[in-house]
Each structure stands twice: as structure tokens, then as C-alpha cells.
Length: 345
Image (cartoon, rainbow, N blue to C red; front, side, top):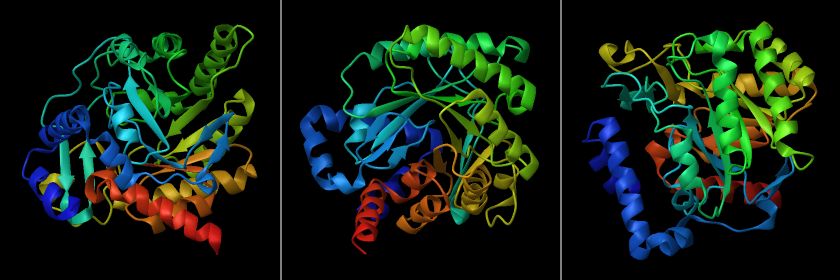
């Protein structure tokens, strides 16, 4: 139904307007009592789907990637579509409007999206108020820095977000890999990245006050060279963070079929064209590290086969974003069904 009725209507709208309309309708239908219907249609509960990672129990390994529910408005409602976890954000200390519109583009011929949103969000403290509601799903908090904050002061922004979210999320994703905030990717360089992660680890110990620390994951770009990926492995082991999310969007524009005007738009590319590169990054990290840390695989997952490919390459969990937009919520159920079928074979 989604691909034949809902998606054609949404694709008549500007991409960002369609996103806001989707949020409005999911919120409205949930208030009207459709949550149980969504759960019955899309949720599979089976102990064989459960995963234990970083001290957390995931009901299934399929999550909603950051960028979809930036401001933590509908995390419980999206869990009704069968997701085992939802990552909110990217959140910054101060609210910011993001880059100028238009900033979100569909590449239909490639089943892809280009975005240059620029961390548009209402600020971490606004999100915290919504996160105080009961969670029906594991929540990840994706954190970043404000555009106006110079890189030399970036650690302060990440710490502000970390402290504000500590009691409200189950794990943290440190975003230093978005191509849409000027200079942000420079924080992936060895020395600034080690400094940032060490400070977050120190804050983690302090904020936990002898209790349970929150898992910290690093979200990396797909455009890193193999040498840079070896650096990432070294940094993860050195700082003792809990894992990696591979990958964010790419700035590459190779072998695209869509209109030249669209493909020349600046921003991060996601969707099917990213699949092979993100899988390479997952496999490289898993093999070269000796599977020393958990990996969440994200990028180009549009089918159960795509998800299984990520998991076989070394991912422990997967996340959807663009595939969810093109394929609809049934994709989550189809992936989980494929995982159950695999467990039986």
C-alpha cells in the first residue's frame, strides 16, 4: 500500500514538506488510536531477533537512523513500525535553523537523497523535555556542535549535549562526519578526535557517579580512506569507546542516473548508491580490528538482502533512513522476517 498509494502522494510534495507532512500524519494517527494497528501490522516479537550489545537488550537489530526524528518528537510512535531502536538528533546545544532551503532533494532514478540540512534542530534542552516521557524503545542520542562554534571549542558543545541527555537516552552517537556543517569533518582527524572522545569518556565516568556509564559510539563518514579507517580502529581501541556507526552520508557523486542539476546539489548523498561503500567500511573495520568492537551498519539498505549483507560483513545492528522513505515501514518487518528465516536454516 505504501509504495502504490502513500509514496506517490508524498513524492508530489517538496521533499522537506513531505517529511513534515509525514510527521504530522504519524502523530495524528497515533493520537486517533492507530498505534495498535501499526504495531500489529509491522512489529515482530521473537526472542531470536534479540541482540545484546553494550549492556543493552535490543528487541531486534533494525533501527531508525539519526536525522529522521531530529527533535525527539515521535520516537515512541516510530517504534510502532517495528524498529528495535530509534536514534534521535543530531542535537546541538543551541537551536539552529540549519542551511537555507531548498536543502533536501530526491534522486528518484537512483533511489537516493541529497541533504544539506545543517543540523537544523530545536536544541538539546527542548528535546530533553520530550524525552522525559516513557520510552517504549531504546533511544540513541546523536550529538553535534553548533555551526557558530569554532572547532577549537567543539568539545564544549558535545559535553553540553552529553550532560543534558545523559538521563534520557540509552546510548550516544558522536557525529563528527556530517558534510553539512563547515569544518565538522576535520574533527575526524586523529588528534582532535582522540581529544574529543577522551573528554566524553571522562564525562561519562563523572556523570555516572559510580553507576552505569552510557555507551558511546562514533559515527564516521564513508569517504575515509583505508588508512584513515585504520586510524579509526586505533582511536576506538585507545579511547575505549563502545563502537562505531558506519556510515554517514557521502560527498561522492559516482555513477548516478538522476538529472545533472540534482546530482550537482551540495550535501550528503544517501540511499542505494551508498550501499557498497558503506558495506566496504563495515567489512574493513570488522576484519582489520578482529571484530574488536560492535558496528552499526547504515547506508543503502533498501531490502532484506541489503541488511543481511551488512550483517554478514560484520555489522551487529543496522539502521534505515533513505530505504525507509522509499520502501516504507514494511521494510522493517521484511528484514526481521528474513533474519528469522536465516536463523531457521
